[in-house]
Image (cartoon, rainbow, N blue to C red):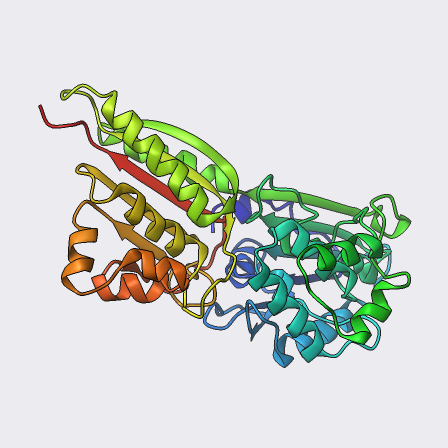
Length: 400
């Protein structure tokens, strides 16, 4: 509600159409109308993330696996953009989650076949950038195709980033941004992660797709702007930590890799930093963001933030004076309505008293059940935003 109005120009004269998709899109639409008044348009957000708007229609659909509601709403959005002229203006509100919510399969691909590929990518451990590359080439709307549908109207795309590096081409798979990747690149990604696609998907990737090159003429009238990003959440957390008397070390806002491996690195770092502290030293907060992945090895329920926290529990082994939180800022870690978890020196003892073993939970990717058992889940409900994962480790000095 602060960053969107600050990024808006004066309301243009003539016809204005607002479109958008993502977990923050309804809140963004609400902010637009707070500044501009009622507008015509349509945005698609996750179930439970809708807001009441004055003129913009808000449709809820499934995330992270697309459903028919998203498919139908995307078709309506494309029709809304048809026939616009040079004097018209389109405002696109794009945020993380838009890849699943803005769905219109290419070629003869059915929605179910698109879901199968999407689910396989999510379970594979593939980085988000590679997943989005495949999604673009299987879509009629990603990789600049939404912007192309509005051409020759002017378009301003305001984006809230949930991707490492804040590249607009990767936010919601870049519906307003061209992409240099090719169908051959998408085929190579599927091969790399051992995903055998349905015939319809293979057929689409065997030819040319609708993804636009970055210099395509249909994108010449688009202005893409990232208005909120993970680095801002870490900076705000750093300010708060310093105000409470802590030192701060920001490890980075674009960390990637296996959640459990990153947790092991961070646990070792926290222990090393603690050993180097004098008993009278100020507490230290280690902050990081980015988007970890989980390669499924078991049939449990979890997500990258809870798995990171679970691996911290195992690696820290009850070390005194070290606490941590790991959450997805959109309020959803994996596919569960859980943002993540908090841990501390007592977590391991509490788990053992309840007969819970972090090693077993890690082996089965059952981090959500583990933290539900010890009462350490973070469940904020819909946050109406999405600036990627947030992790903080509080390291207190050793007792003298």
